[in-house]
Figure 1 (cartoon, rainbow, N blue to C red):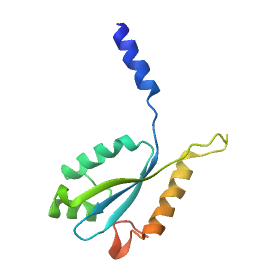
Figure 2: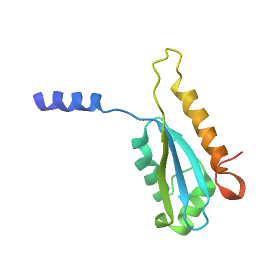
Figure 3: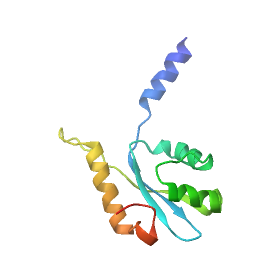
Amino acid sequence: MDRKKELKQQFKEITVEAGIYQIKNTINNKILVGSTRNLKTLNGLKFMLETNGYTTNKELQKEWNQYGKDAFRIDILEKLKKSDDPYFNEKEALLALEEKWIEKLQSYGERGYNKK
Protein backbone atom coordinates (compact mmCIF):
# COMPACT_ATOMS: atom_id res chain seq x y z
CA MET A 1 0.00 0.00 0.00
CA ASP A 2 2.88 2.38 0.72
CA ARG A 3 4.18 1.83 -2.81
CA LYS A 4 0.87 3.02 -4.24
CA LYS A 5 1.01 6.22 -2.16
CA GLU A 6 4.61 6.75 -3.22
CA LEU A 7 3.72 6.42 -6.91
CA LYS A 8 0.80 8.83 -6.52
CA GLN A 9 3.09 11.39 -4.88
CA GLN A 10 5.67 11.01 -7.67
CA PHE A 11 2.94 11.58 -10.26
CA LYS A 12 1.82 14.77 -8.49
CA GLU A 13 5.38 16.09 -8.46
CA ILE A 14 5.95 15.66 -12.20
CA THR A 15 6.07 19.07 -13.81
CA VAL A 16 3.77 19.61 -16.74
CA GLU A 17 5.32 21.84 -19.37
CA ALA A 18 3.32 23.67 -22.00
CA GLY A 19 4.91 24.68 -25.25
CA ILE A 20 5.07 25.04 -29.00
CA TYR A 21 6.08 22.23 -31.34
CA GLN A 22 6.48 21.69 -35.05
CA ILE A 23 5.88 18.65 -37.22
CA LYS A 24 8.15 18.93 -40.25
CA ASN A 25 7.86 16.98 -43.47
CA THR A 26 11.51 16.47 -44.46
CA ILE A 27 10.56 15.61 -48.07
CA ASN A 28 8.84 18.89 -49.00
CA ASN A 29 9.81 20.98 -45.91
CA LYS A 30 6.19 21.80 -45.03
CA ILE A 31 5.56 22.30 -41.33
CA LEU A 32 2.72 22.39 -38.87
CA VAL A 33 3.16 24.60 -35.82
CA GLY A 34 1.05 23.58 -32.86
CA SER A 35 0.76 24.08 -29.14
CA THR A 36 -0.01 21.86 -26.19
CA ARG A 37 -0.49 22.41 -22.48
CA ASN A 38 1.49 19.21 -21.87
CA LEU A 39 4.47 18.47 -24.12
CA LYS A 40 4.38 14.83 -23.00
CA THR A 41 1.24 14.41 -25.14
CA LEU A 42 3.35 14.58 -28.32
CA ASN A 43 3.73 10.80 -28.19
CA GLY A 44 -0.06 10.52 -28.40
CA LEU A 45 -0.09 12.90 -31.36
CA LYS A 46 2.49 10.75 -33.15
CA PHE A 47 0.42 7.64 -32.37
CA MET A 48 -2.70 9.25 -33.87
CA LEU A 49 -0.77 10.08 -37.06
CA GLU A 50 0.62 6.55 -37.27
CA THR A 51 -2.84 5.00 -36.88
CA ASN A 52 -4.53 7.38 -39.36
CA GLY A 53 -6.51 9.00 -36.55
CA TYR A 54 -5.29 12.59 -36.74
CA THR A 55 -8.43 14.45 -37.79
CA THR A 56 -7.22 17.93 -36.82
CA ASN A 57 -5.35 18.45 -40.11
CA LYS A 58 -6.35 16.17 -42.98
CA GLU A 59 -3.58 17.40 -45.30
CA LEU A 60 -0.89 16.52 -42.77
CA GLN A 61 -2.48 13.09 -42.19
CA LYS A 62 -2.65 12.47 -45.95
CA GLU A 63 1.03 13.29 -46.44
CA TRP A 64 2.00 11.26 -43.34
CA ASN A 65 0.25 8.27 -44.93
CA GLN A 66 1.87 9.02 -48.30
CA TYR A 67 5.49 9.54 -47.17
CA GLY A 68 5.56 7.46 -43.97
CA LYS A 69 6.61 8.33 -40.43
CA ASP A 70 10.34 8.43 -41.27
CA ALA A 71 9.75 11.47 -43.48
CA PHE A 72 8.61 13.57 -40.48
CA ARG A 73 10.30 15.17 -37.48
CA ILE A 74 8.59 16.47 -34.36
CA ASP A 75 10.54 19.21 -32.56
CA ILE A 76 9.82 21.38 -29.55
CA LEU A 77 10.27 25.01 -30.56
CA GLU A 78 9.70 26.76 -27.25
CA LYS A 79 8.50 25.99 -23.75
CA LEU A 80 6.03 28.38 -22.17
CA LYS A 81 7.52 30.32 -19.28
CA LYS A 82 5.21 30.31 -16.28
CA SER A 83 4.33 33.60 -14.64
CA ASP A 84 3.58 34.42 -11.02
CA ASP A 85 1.18 37.12 -12.20
CA PRO A 86 -2.26 36.28 -10.75
CA TYR A 87 -3.84 37.34 -14.07
CA PHE A 88 -1.59 35.06 -16.15
CA ASN A 89 -3.72 32.95 -18.48
CA GLU A 90 -1.75 29.94 -19.71
CA LYS A 91 -4.17 29.21 -22.55
CA GLU A 92 -4.02 32.76 -23.92
CA ALA A 93 -0.24 32.95 -23.52
CA LEU A 94 0.17 29.65 -25.34
CA LEU A 95 -2.06 30.80 -28.19
CA ALA A 96 -0.09 34.05 -28.56
CA LEU A 97 3.18 32.11 -28.58
CA GLU A 98 1.82 29.73 -31.22
CA GLU A 99 0.72 32.65 -33.42
CA LYS A 100 4.20 34.19 -33.06
CA TRP A 101 5.84 30.96 -34.29
CA ILE A 102 3.35 30.53 -37.16
CA GLU A 103 4.21 34.03 -38.38
CA LYS A 104 7.93 33.55 -37.82
CA LEU A 105 8.05 30.26 -39.77
CA GLN A 106 5.16 31.16 -42.11
CA SER A 107 3.80 27.63 -41.79
CA TYR A 108 0.78 28.18 -44.03
CA GLY A 109 0.00 28.11 -47.72
CA GLU A 110 2.62 26.26 -49.74
CA ARG A 111 5.06 26.27 -46.79
CA GLY A 112 2.95 24.53 -44.23
CA TYR A 113 -0.15 22.88 -42.88
CA ASN A 114 -1.44 25.74 -40.72
CA LYS A 115 -4.37 27.86 -41.90
CA LYS A 116 -3.78 31.60 -42.03
